[in-house]
Length: 311
Figure 1: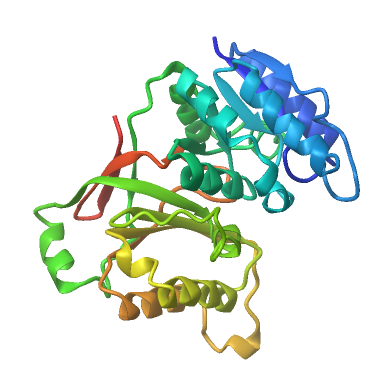
Figure 2 (figure 1 turned 90 degrees about the vertical axis):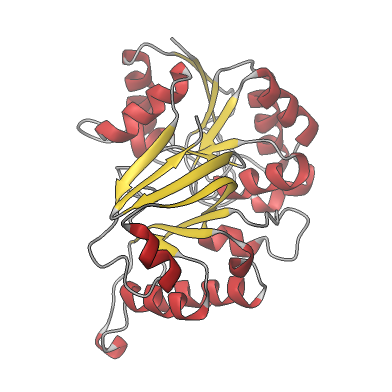
């Protein structure tokens, strides 16, 4: 059984039923759940004013919990990054608290990495993942349990059939016998949030890392525009590999004339010698693995089988 602390550092919780279902599910899984005193606060679109949410992050760090899990994402963390208690967060992580979240939580994760080098976890949120009607996704729940039990060692997936198209020739030739990156820093998260940190003290700059990206409600041309920013800033060319998760919630229109996410991926591969792989099971989707942001990983790709290993 793990001690899980629920807090709200971003947008206000609007779906209270999902919030309650999520807590009930975690308890049914055998966990002890502690809810922050301001988890359901609301100020404008936020879960409390800025000072309230900074204090909530501090209480999560001081909770001694095994896992500090956000109630939801949305927006709100970037505006409080200068005020976050980074030393307290770092000490909490050293003591064993694993901070878990998705979406807007990318801002806190990258800021913690930039300021302290500590590892946090990209994964679920309470309401959207554990509070769903019906049963939570099996893979997500199993990965979360592995983290809670200290047993998580990696994540594997099958690359889409067309995923080797456009890869560097040296990588394509190596896939059948196995292509690997060893001991690289895994980092990234939500693409929009990551790009919003460019040029700020909260943007880490791992060289020879593995960068993973996802987004929601962003048309492919907007995705391409943000990837262009990363390319022109030199971020992508400094990596060992780029992993693309799910990009969901958008609609193409007749004006696109065939321009879609596959078009963006093909274009990105033409701009860089860094291998770009897709299909990572992570993003604003039910099936998501948990990933150590800032952790050292091995990336192994053989044929269409991909494995991230940190154990």
